[in-house]
Length: 102
Image (tube, rainbow, N blue to C red; front, side, top):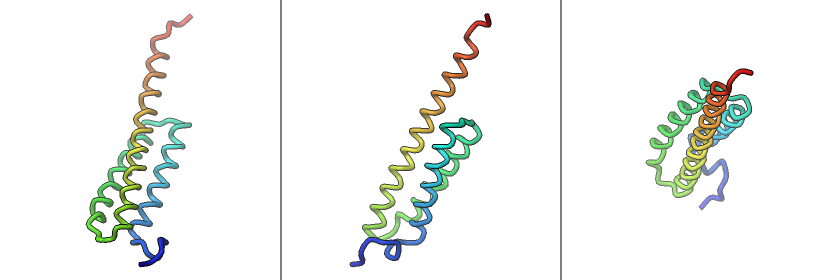
């Protein structure tokens, strides 16, 4: 049995890890400079990544399945954070429209 390392993991999984890192960066950037358009792009990238994971899950490697499980948890966390961002920004918009002009 090989030690855990890039040489022992499917290249598609390594690419998914990189895409997951990119998604995390996108969520971070969008948190500090919120954009509905960017939020939609993040959801689209997340859906594409989930489709890729479903295809690769047919692997027989226990290590790869464990990695995919953790990637999936991270991707779902990204969606949770994004939903929170949307709620926060929506409430900011609602408050700014409901305050009377003095």
